Image (cartoon, rainbow, N blue to C red; front, side, top):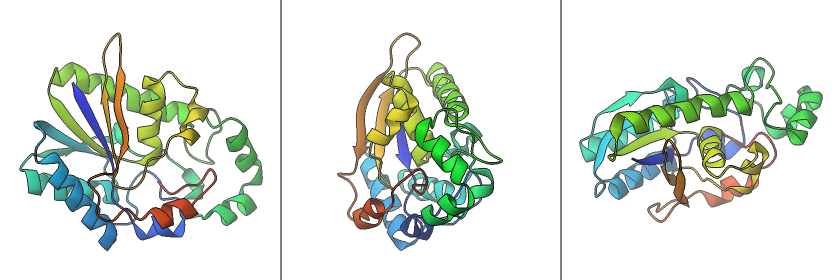
Amino acid sequence: MELILVRHGETDANRQGKLMGSFGGPSLNPTGRAQADDIAAALKAEPVAHIYTSPAHRARETAEIVSRAIGVPFSELNDFSEIDVGRMVGLTSAELRQQFPVHYLEWEQDPATARHPGGETMLELQERTWGAAQALAGKYGDRTVVVVSHLFAILTVVTRVLEMPLRGFRRIRLEPGAMVRIEPGPDKSEVLSANETWHLRTRGQDAWASASGPDKPC
């Protein structure tokens, strides 16, 4: 199976550098909706069997636009929700450092096991995203499936396929609206492409480049 992982389109919270969390959250801004249109145009030529999406507003809205444009149904898949950041939802980098200084240092030192206050660890996130990817591979065989998800959720899958330590996610760029292609298999999995942005007319790179640290908006 070819699994196309799509990061949702941009939101105002992305531009403001705020953490958004797993469920609910902001909707797409005009740039994000344009990115969703671009994703749909790119996927029209793909033999997509089904679209899955995180239930968060920003991901579901992206999936709805793509689904409507390419005529393929979508379903929610909770296992591809973003990492649960607990009590840090809505915080900027400066606010995070001020309110959770101990956690900030723990995250810098070992992001795999550092638990977000009231939320998840990256290792827990990887366990559910990789389990979901393997389940889709077993269900769809050699067909193509699209999953609309989030920054950290997608990067945990990529690091797993590449057999990288989870801290290696910091070396992988993934912009809003970008696509990642993988082939998950029972014995061997491969990354076919990463951070595909050729299809995006509006990339929002300036906003992405301005966000840094453990709180990159997701």
